[in-house]
Length: 122
Image (tube, rainbow, N blue to C red; front, side, top):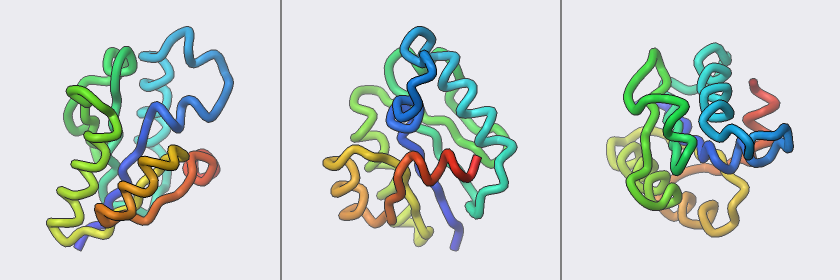
């Protein structure tokens, strides 16, 4: 069994008012870089990007971080990633502050933490 962390990038980036809205792709790239070097207790980190943020990091795997570009709804992509990992028998943690997504993530099999939890780890 692996441990998987699924990150709602838009929600994590949006939790820090550092001007991210002026450069969504750059903000996504900075989060990706921080996840690559962080000492997190997870085997795999899944970073879900949507909209303009997708321009900051290509989809695919880079070390232990796998970047997913949401085709439509970022929330739907996050729940799909949680289900995929949970169905494979992995222990899944998700990061979001979105109440609706939090509930859907828990139903799909994830334990959910806030963006501040993740930012404290980085």
